[in-house]
Image 1: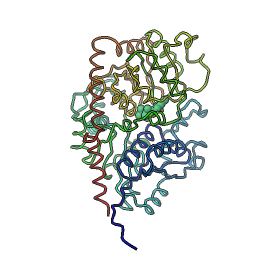
Image 2: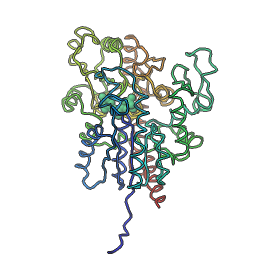
Image 3: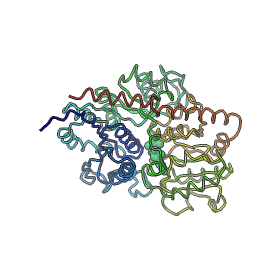
Length: 485
Ligand code: UDP
């Protein structure tokens, strides 16, 4: 038998926490690695595999020969104390979940159950690296046992990672006299202003606090970080991050920009609750930059009173809109003003459930994006060249808002003051109306739009051959190919 001297393909394993905001960019990463000659394997649970398999099959049909697959881990929800079928954050944050108990922490902690299965898989397949979610701190140790480099994926950008680091190091929130008093984030470039109520100020002794310490410690021991961002978007923060936090960081985004065709863009995440072609036709009938798209991502779920105010604000502003509401029920009465949909017919559209977000953002009729500042949404808005209305709810979204409003200067804040996980700070219809007008009309709106278009050009350049993100993906592949035993 002759010896095969052809180079073995780099094998990258990717392991996202089971939430759409982490699974969507992971699928993009897997596609990216395999497009660049590597083998990619995504690790997930049976129910999530069904969601991912469709996207992977569609990609393979378009790109025969590329090596991308899924490996399924067992996740016995009931045994782990979770409701049957609770394999995705969608389960307990959606309106259909009857228990209404916040399962976030329990869900995250339950994922430790994967550790043994991961170790067995790493031992038998020895991939060249494992890109595991930040919420899986135990993955560093598991990978270490088998000499597999573990990379961390946070799902957010440099700016929020640096902001959080500086706040943790200096605790400026402890020196203000009220939770709404502003402070400058110490050490962070750009004199960024925040308030105590906008950050999630964790008690280090609490269960969440202890878990987050473990997350940070596992990052320090990891082989580096993969960031869904591009250098030109946040150069000062990319430099700061690599100088003071984690030297080994590769920025390879915006990941959504590697989905180029209609099918791929339409297939992101869950099945859309609207016919994508009909939705595009509706947008085709509108003038360029005349429609506002409103979405709060895959986790936030507003109370009925808040939805009612959004509807009233939208109607008062008179703007064209597509509004995504995470409700599948037809009970308009509780959260929509009487006769709302009839009155806005032709002008506005509500998508109940899941929207084909990237298709909508990329359409020329879309002229503004009201966003909760989830990192994927924010980057998708940047890639589409859109000015934004920032409406952070929880997680690291208030940091992301500051990037848009204070650094990039492409957005106006709706005025959310407080970090309130899941349901958000209450915003009146007047504020909604004002923000809609501000983002679409006037001299400042034009400035923001110009700036947003410039950023979109930079994003496009970053993911082309020779661009900053493509250079980083190449150096990532080189690094882990060389490290191979
Ligand atoms: N998304 C979508 N349709 C929806 C809601 C969300 O395609 O109706 C996608 C969106 O494009 C983004 C992801 O889901 O890629 C949400 O991630 P993000 O970081 O913005 O927010 P999260 O859901 O994690 O809060």
